[in-house]
Length: 460
Ligand code: IFM
Image 1: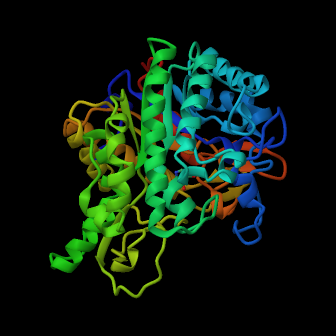
Image 2: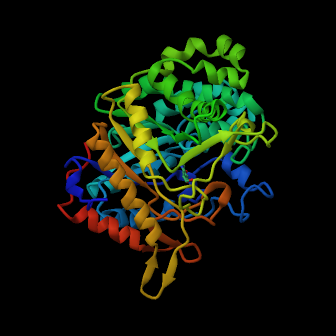
Image 3: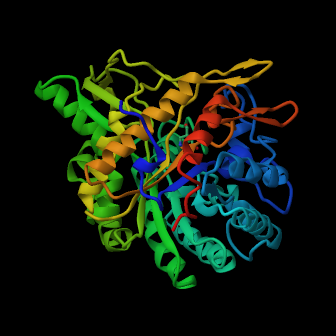
């Protein structure tokens, strides 16, 4: 890898860190916040590896000024955070809770004061529990409720927050939430989880025009988690396994959002053709609404071979037809293989769908165990992961991909969903007993990388 420099990237490149509300905020019963599906799920015995919840997480709700200070210290020019729907509408519908809005206004204004551009995500998996009680994402009405929530939030904050993402990783919301049940709300409806995915995408499509109507200088997009998928061999069975995974993981979301259609082969794999013909086809124009950017979250590559068809179904309905092949690549503490080239693959995959559409890596990062010593927090593997993936971003730019920014996951260690606090992704270490923050070696490396060649402009 040739030496990496900030000057390899455009001067107006967005350099950010990312978090999500339930993973960092804590204060789950303060400020008028109502319960979300994650509050309920995390209290379910056995749901979370270490038996913890998002309380108090990083106490970001109270410590956001310190955290904004850390971002300024790192030298980033953007912060991607999410808004907790149940802070804004405690039961998912009705009037805005002024205390919820006030928190996000304080946060956004503190960011702007430091020259850090706020990038808000409206939905990062924490559905108000009251909406789940009415069917959650399996109910079409949730899409309408989301559109109204989006309209209200952007109407309140659109003067200070100019960059809006509707959804984060709808694949996870739908398939981890409603098929495998590894995530809230922990349901197991099998292939019908695809209907939840459709309602999520409909929510996105309904919200975009309402967001745009709030002000004429807003940028709006959606974030998808994409995987580079390789077949283990050219055998027809292995190639078909790759088709299945690429279909459900990537094309099932990219195609409706960017190309106006659902992939027919995936609907066939799922046995959901009839439901989609009756309930979804008419929504494709709504879902395919123009966006200003696409956010891409990338962590790993899948190398796939044909399965035995007798394996246990998992998050991917139909995954019994697929086996994941161990390529021998190093793995992170999540068990995810490290393949920086896969980031180029997914960016090119997205760029091919709608040429010219600005792309941002809205998440990329790695969980590793840190080494704590008297002189700091050492995490060479995370630093190397970051450097390798930034090099992949540079390669993607060199190949003509319209990449406009990179957000590192994550600013700081936080509640890693079903893994609780047992997995650390931060470039800032959090001592959960004291809430003390310490910039890790990876964060120091990022700081040095960003400061060489100047701080750069606030992101456009
Ligand atoms: O922590 C999550 C984040 O909330 C969504 N994308 C993947 C991250 C790591 O698992």
